[in-house]
Length: 366
Image (cartoon, rainbow, N blue to C red; front, side):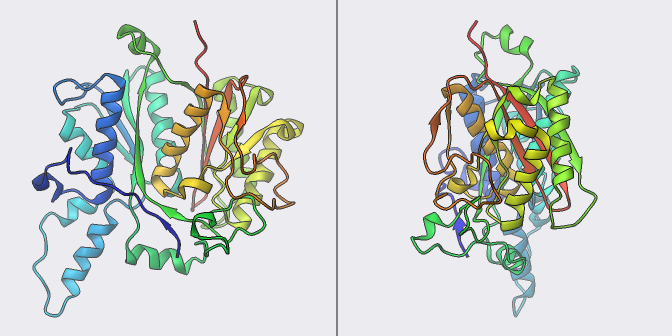
């Protein structure tokens, strides 16, 4: 089994006593939220903006604590159980601890929808801001599933990559004929999402704009993706943004490196964009960071924002032998300059047939 763990020390920001009541995913989320607030200029005297909202995605929550709980329970003789285990294992833990740590009293919402969790969290926060319910939201996701119990379940699905002959680091290979599955990762990404008026009022410089969001369900199969549902999410997002497909220059693909999943997404992109699909740059950054499940979408949105900022598109790493059935421009091996890139899509698709797409726009110089 190939994994993408994070070298992570929360010590400077999370006291040891507080950390006893946080799972690994929650610790990552609290640290990510700290850096998001600090980087945006919204961290004042250790606290965040009181009236802000928190919209987070998380797939399994405290799976590490759940495993430890059962290990204590099933030990011979059984060991004393922790009273805090039940609230710690809940998927809402990361969002709740961000709220408590930074004094944020607005709505605190968690979406747990497998691999679209943080995409839906960001999309629903975008809608809440657009409709005037809140002005500022911390959005993102957190996930830490790299423990033996969870990994055993993933192994039984037969979707985890095997080690590539050139080394473990080359084993996540979306769109490549030698792909064998996904590399499971972990981490947390938190972003600050604000209304235009709130950003202008404090003189902040936005990194990019979210201008559209679409969500759909395949209503088809628990684990097998469907191109119709994926295309519907993309079309809805473009309609929501009032942007024609021809204006989109880049798609950050969900592509995890499974044979069927990558091919279905390529078909969905072609169904959505028609002939313009041949003009699109499409890459999967999971080839570098692995699949963070509930946190993947947030990381991919952050990377897409960076691409819009810099005018440079990230490649699909390790794409040395493209699958003929993945016949798009998948930006193999090396990134490229894209100074005219204005609109980009970020795709997320999940077990259970849930789909979510976000449309992002470059902030133009005034």
